[in-house]
Image (cartoon, rainbow, N blue to C red; front, side):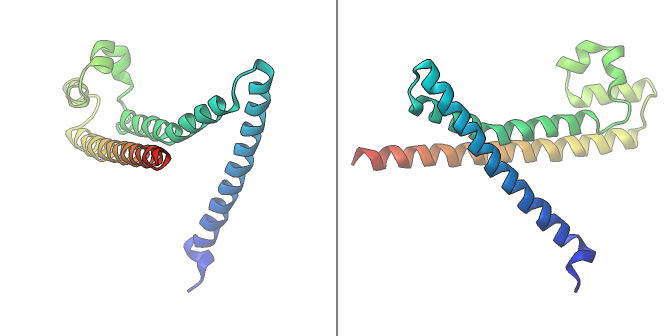
Length: 150
């Protein structure tokens, strides 16, 4: 079995490069924030806690953003609804929006069904990841607080 033919080697290299960039970027951000804290007379602990809170929330924000775009663009004609009926686009449900597009002949029933499946899968993935991440973070904080109380 050759790793290069399956793309494993390329994925491993991209993963390692990404981790390297992440670590170096985090180092730069922490150094700059420490300098900012010193300049304004803010405790470095406050800056550290702020960085940690933002850092733990960024993956969820990215996941929600990507998932939202995937849902919106799951049908090729979905954005036409924005010009046709902005109220339904922003306040209506995904199914109502698709029904409107089918009714107007902009998409077929098959495309609407495919978009609904994408919506359900993506929504479940986003919610599961968010709930799992929140539970881990809360448990970690609770464990730290209890261990510091001793």
